[in-house]
Length: 357
Image 1 (cartoon, rainbow, N blue to C red):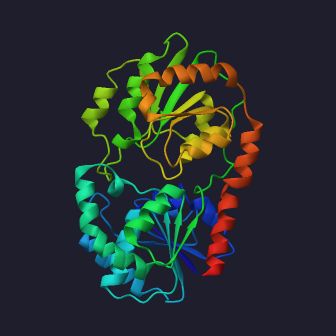
Image 2 (image 1 turned 180 degrees about the vertical axis):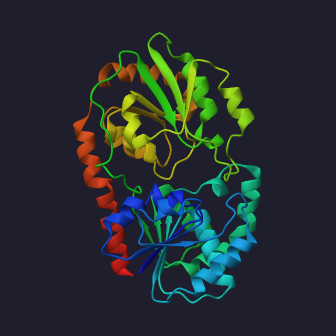
Image 3 (image 1 turned 30 degrees about the horizontal axis):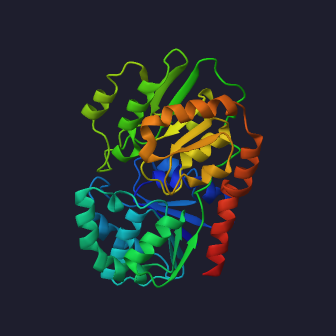
């Protein structure tokens, strides 16, 4: 039995549900809070509802609820915890409730708010460090990272004594995407992400003002995440949307609708491993991203460009120049992604880790 655990059901459905299905020979149970349990059960053979207020960084009631769940699970079962926040909660519960467990794995898909430049985050990071050094070393046998920079930074922060491993991306189910066939005459530029400040939404709105509106259309897709402290609020979003050339789409069905657009832009200051860039290159869009630890991989793919943060003023020129040479669909990208970053490829790597521990 393997238990997939996260503080947010989205981490176990949209991001890892296909992995759970691929590993259907292993009995995988989901442990997460969810307002839509039927969605979780599409991917998992069993779901344990964990009552947790995701809006709070520390929900003591949620900690107690998780301790009761863990105490009722067989000690021989494997736990695979997803996201750093979930890992912090899990490690505190295991450590302070002295819960005996067998083998536990943490997948870090990005260091998130805690390792941002936000003053509150820096203070919190320093306060938590002596505790996390103890709790993580007790709770986790293996930590899986999606890029080398995160691996180095967190290992140094935690002084982690157990095994760490690199598995790039959470994988995408390449069989489920509608693929792009042609480009629009008037090119459609889109940024699609959660509407967080560190995703560069405001920077995107400034960037598109420099493009020729006779040649391009501009779109923003995503939703406010009230459970995340760095989310835009309604007023901040309204301010950005005062630019009437920017069309707001709200939620976008990436698998079925992304192919309608031509150029995918990411202005995110930080990514663990950019899923949207992976999806964009696979579907067949031209992809431009601010360079960071989680977007460097697009260098190995065609029809892409990395933007240096210090040269953001000229980014529109770089993109325009690249477009003149790159407006075609790359079949090579699709082959590389299937072989290296598909759900199947990532699931096989996870399975290897499970067998090793």
